[in-house]
Amino acid sequence: MLAQLLGIRMILWAGQLIPRPLPPDILAAITKVDVTNDARQGDGFQLTVALSKDNPFDYNVMLSGALNPPNRIVIAVLIGASLEVLIDGVITQHQLSPSEQPGRSTLTVTGKDVTQLLDLEEKEASFPYQPDFLIVGQLLLNYMQNGLLGPHLLVPTSDFPIDIFRRPQQHGTDLRYIQELAQRNGYVFYIEPVTFGVTRAYFGPENRLGLPQPALTLNMGAYTNLKSIGFTNDSLAPVGAKGSFVEPITKTVIPIPPLPPLRVPLTPIPSMPQRTTLLSQSANEGPLEAFASALAVSTQAPEAVSGQGEIDTVRYGRVLHPRSLVGVRGVGFSYDGLYYVSRVSHSITLDSYSQTFSLSRDGTGSMLPVLPT
Image (cartoon, rainbow, N blue to C red):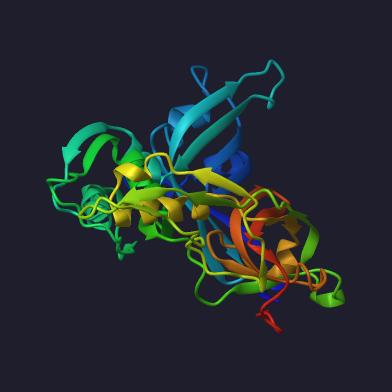
């Protein structure tokens, strides 16, 4: 395997507008890098830097300015011959811990992914006659100078607002408004890196299509690539929705039928919702809006089955990507099969690279007899 032959290397670029390679002395001072890619809470990173004070006025890292807020930063790993960008982000915070003992002073550099750039300025704006996905595309055009380049994937929405009924209004930052639009449609919004300094946005349902990532394997001898894994099946996690809307012509009250989540099922035995949420505002909405609200509730509720574990990165030989599918095998029929990767945390030091993960799906059982490896 190339990861075993060529090893694993970290690549880190930073800069004010355009990220570029860091000086060797700055790279050598970084003792730990943590990156978290979270489908629900967003992506972030943290660097731990050992400080030296050759200059009598300040620490060398501080004087260089390379890791100062609000610089852009790109963190990547080269596993064998495969280059993977873990995060394209913005430095937001410093935490300095000076020490009287030589070499024990540290600087902790914290930041978030480039969605932070969309959350800096509050605005008031109006978007007459524009459906939600076109509004998102219009807002993203303002950030091309920050490397937020396409092709963006913006899934169309069912609404087309008419001025006499509703005019879309923005009150807050671009990020908060886009998240509000995503929540209303049962969609997700995130920005992921394509390569160094270039990212793309996704606005649509959770992506559960396409070829799954190579399987996470346990109890299969030389094919095992997991250090640990565990599962939880919570029957109270899924949530259904009920409500009604008023048909605009006849003024008839029509109940909203039970609606499945906007997610591709991953199991033959999905868990049915045991809890129900009442849609208190659906009576004031049109038919399409009321149905979208019901779909959003069921889609955004947690799934019944969740899993957590740690990968043996050298044996796996690649980076596990969040917001996509992966197979699990070797844990029994009930929990073998495909899962949605909801969270991956990377921890990199001078002599180790670990990946921990969180998975989710709608029930138990496997729909595939064979998983990609």
